[in-house]
Length: 561
Image (tube, rainbow, N blue to C red; front, top):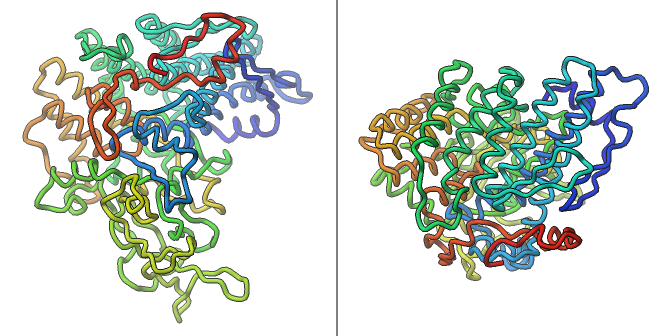
């Protein structure tokens, strides 16, 4: 999203959201009648809130938690018996034992519903705006309504169809929901532009979302099925949309894998659709700080920016890397696993050069040591004025003898829940402008990127028995030439492709959707043994059902909740 749109959002658009499950109402104040604004500024002020809601959806405790902590990739124990207990919701989420009052599920639902509501508000408001830009913004609002509904379908099994703010939404499921989202995206495809992304919907984003819809259509038609039927027409459609993106010449695979998640990734040519988080958007930094230790301080300029000892990766997921590359270490074999930026010995580093290691962090961690002298907090410096890098201990947790030494084993036992258990993930760069560690993130949060297009095309081909699927997989592996790329695979199967998607997209909030589609979600992994297929969908929040109680039978709870 451009700065101009953000200025419109922050300076001109005043929104008051009134949540109602049955009506999806949003009250808009002074949005199209502010004195002195041009028609174009008014149009920008109307579309901006539609995109702005994405930052709330993509919080660490919202969409990330539902898509990652519910899977074999991430686990969040009750750290040290004092942190991240949260009434057991993260343990329930991981064990597929959710309840309808779960705060993270409720917040994710509310944020998506608000996104739909803001989209409807824009759709109702923009047709009366005479500025030429209003037609494009109207198409984008319609596309965003479809995208928010795609999230709703994937997580909760339904979509809300609403054309006017005064109407009661119509609820669709299954084939009807798929058809609705498809028709909405196809309707805007001729109108949206090619070059306004990745923070806004473009033709490439529409094609990519259509490919995703067709790839998952078998699940959405019969979400509790024992096995899914992937129709050839869906696979053909997914291939066609992937071909459109690849042949457009607009996107390129990044040679440096971790550049995809840097502060300046907005211009990375691999990104197709993303949550725009540049500094003037007041974005968040949760994707960076959530997993790392509370005694890892990524910014020499700020003694208050640190991690929070959140989720680690499960031993099960880690072992997929080890088993794939044994007897070699995955850190030296696949550049997606780890990138070392910081010396792993006691040393002195110039503050301007200090940069944390990225990827999957294992073992003893080194970094800035924070000390308090006469009430003043600072980092230890070397005699030459450089930053001292040293072994880290859990000083901020009042456990100075516990090393920040990440272990493979992590579980819900007392020992397995200690602060240092579980290998951690720092995939997104810790933004240099983040003063608290929680806000002012600059990296765009990836929703869709070109590697996914190649791997979706490979999967669609594989499900049709097309042997050329292997070429797409190896093309992605070979592209990360900033370091020695991962060796080519000699063959490809659905199980290997699922593993490859884990290597490429870990921590990117696609794992739950992938696990369901590949028939892995009812599997067993660390601290999870529930095999109930009805847990593929999350519970509709009880607050939403209560809010719709004036319409009997309107909002029906998902099975098993």
